[in-house]
Amino acid sequence: MQTSKVINNLFLMKLKSSYGQQKIIICAFILIPLLLLFVFTYLPFCEMIGFSFFNMKYVGERIFIGLKNYRDIFTRSDIFGSLKLSLYYMAGAVVQLVLALLLATILSFKLRFANVFKGILFFPYLINGIAIGFIFKFFFTRGYVFDTVLGWFGIPLEKLPYWLKTQGLNNVMLVGTSVWRYLGNNMVLFIGAIMSIDPEMYEAAELDGANKRQQFRNIILPGIKTIFTLNIILSISGSLSAFEPPYVIASRGANGTATYFIIMDKIAHTSQKVGLASAMAVFLLAIIFLVTILQNLFFRYMFRKAGTGNSGKGDVL
Image (cartoon, rainbow, N blue to C red; front, side, top):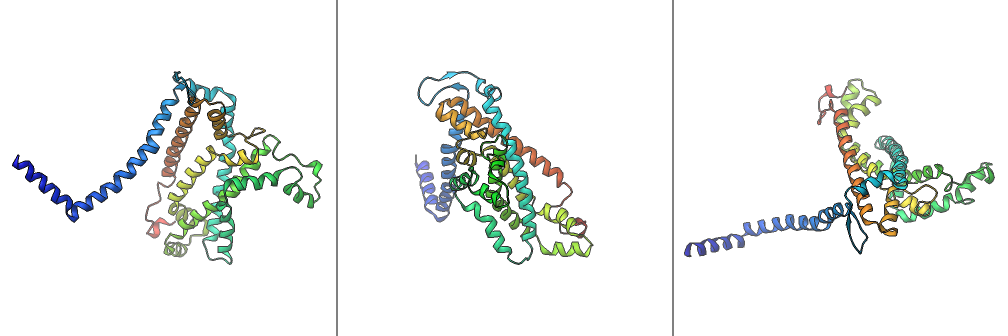
């Protein structure tokens, strides 16, 4: 009994000491965010996985149906068609990344009015997505801004298509809107990565006779591979989860513009098929996870010969 009291007193004294209080604060800063993350992220996600095996609404009876919801993703034409529609946005993401990298490479060097161009290109990213949707809704509406501008060049209105009603063409217009909005954000991330590269590496490359193309391939690309990978992940996940442009500009995905997220929203909130919507969300996460692994393997293979430091002249050429 006396021994336990001594141990308790020593433990309390250790807790009251500055060292003990420091440990308590550290543990609190670690445990509280982990607890919040578990309660508001991982626990709901696990519940959603469980919902995906049931035929259920928000209120009412739950009927276990196994993998039927996952089979419906591939058998329902609206869901599978929205997955194919994501290819439009993926193609736009590739164009967006190429343009962003090209502009970042140019603007990272000392040019006149470079900061002005950076600000102009980054500004669309600061605008609210709903506001951009309404802007481009009027921009592409028949007889409005875009048609008026084309009319200045002598193209009559009768020969112009309906930009938001013509199948296929409307998706190209929506993808162009997304590229316009997110181009500046990717460009700024690339510029930050490029400017963090040691300038002495360019000087060493020039002394060894490397041209601009060789410097880009052997210095810039390996130096920004982390940001490049991050931009690809964000672009792919954004392509699969596009929502605002087709929802606002094309009136909730009308005329074949409904993306995967819009179909999921209709199934979850209009039809109240919570189990099917949960299966769609889990399947989307699996696709993003798989694509992330594949692109990591691809870039690991692509940059296998590039050293992390690139400090020697022999690494440049």
